[in-house]
Length: 126
Image 1 (spheres, rainbow, N blue to C red):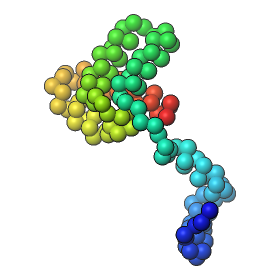
Image 2 (cartoon, rainbow, N blue to C red):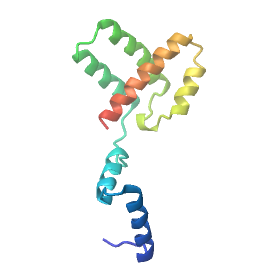
Image 3 (tube, one colour):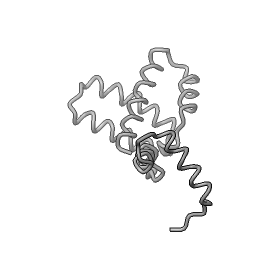
């Protein structure tokens, strides 16, 4: 593998890493970073993740009322972001959508909570 970084730059960067990491080997920090910040994420449509989450929550035996609530909330979310990959939906877009929805504060809060559950689910499954 060819590295285009001049030796003196590599040494300076290594010294900075050692200062930041202390006794932690840089390779361990690098592996952790790659794990937490994946660059190769398969594109998945919002609707697909919503459907997967609802199936998982139903299989977990959660109450019919809860399933009904997330179906409603996440159905609205999937409708708004129809055709989009979940990884491409930004927090700003969600805030804008909630702010202009015309729904009551309680309903917006329910939507926000369900969307947060959805994103936590998606992140957990990469």
